[in-house]
Image (cartoon, rainbow, N blue to C red; front, side, top):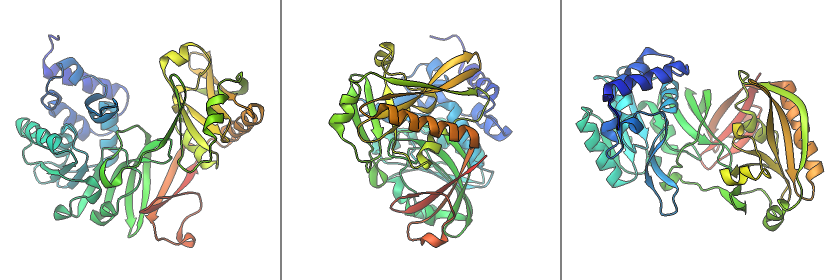
Length: 400
C-alpha cells in the first residue's frame, strides 16, 4: 500500500531517472511526467507500477516472460536514442502494455502519428483499451506480426522495436523513411548478447548505428523469432552459446567436475571507465563466445563466480569453459580475473587472459555497426567483424 498519489510516484520516478543521467532532452522527461503508467498495469500496485523495475505481464507455461513493461530507465534511454520529434510518423513493434506507445505519442505530438503492432490479439485489445482510457485513443493499435511492419502507414520517420530481434526485417528496411531512424534491440550473438542500436538511414541500402546500449528484451515472436542454444551444465548453471559452435555437450557438463583453474590478470578497471562492451569485443575477437548463467544458489557454493557485469561472459573450445571474474580492490576499482573448468583449463584460461590484456591495451569503447542488405557483395562492405543474417549483413568496428 502507498499513501503517495500517482502524480507523486511519477515525479519520484522521473527524479530517479534524471539522477542517473539518462534524460538528455526535456521532451523525453516531459513525456515521462505525462504518461500515467498505472493505467496500463491493471492489477499492479501503484508503487510497483512506478518503480524502476521490469513488470512481467505474461509468462509462457515454462515460466519465461512473453510480455512485460520494460525497465523505465532503459525505456527512457531508448526514447533518447529514437529522437522522436513533433510531427513524426512512428511505427512501434511490440505494443505489450501500451506504455511505450503512449510515450511515443507524447513525443510525436498532435501533428504526428503512432502506429503500434502487437502479435497477441488479447494484448493488442487490452493496450488499445488502456491507451483510450489514458487519453491516447489517437494511437493506432494493430494486431499482427511486427516482422511485416505496417505498409499502410509507411513511410515512417522512426521505427522503434521493443522486443529482442535477430535480424533487420525486410519490411523495416522498406518502410523506413529516407532519412529515418530505426531503434532495435538486436541480438548480436546466439548467446543472447543484445544491444539497443540506433540506426540512421544514411543512404539507400545502408544503416549506420549512432549509439549502442546494453540491454535485454523478451525475444520477438512470429516470423522474426529465433531461439538460441542453451545447455544445462548443473543445477543452477547454464551455458548459452551460438547455434553453429561445435560443442561436446557431455564434455562441457563434465567440465564442472574438474577443479577450477583461476588466474588474476593484474588488470584493473574503475567504475567510471567505459567497459560495458567487453563481451561484444570478445565476440569480435573471433572466439567461441558464450554466456554462463548462474543462479543465486550456484553462486553461494563458490564454485561458479562469473562476473555479473558482462552477464557471465565466457569462451569455450567445445569441451572447456573459461569465464571472466572480478575481485574488488577498492570501492570503485576491481581486478579482472579468469576461471576455467575442463580438460584444457590451463590453455583456455591463458587464452582468455591474453585477450583481456589485448582489450585493456586497445581500450575499445563504442561499437559502430553498419548494416547492408543480405545480397550486398563483400567488396561493398566496410572492414570489420561481420555477422550475416537472413535479411542483413552487419559489420562491427570499434572506436577507442
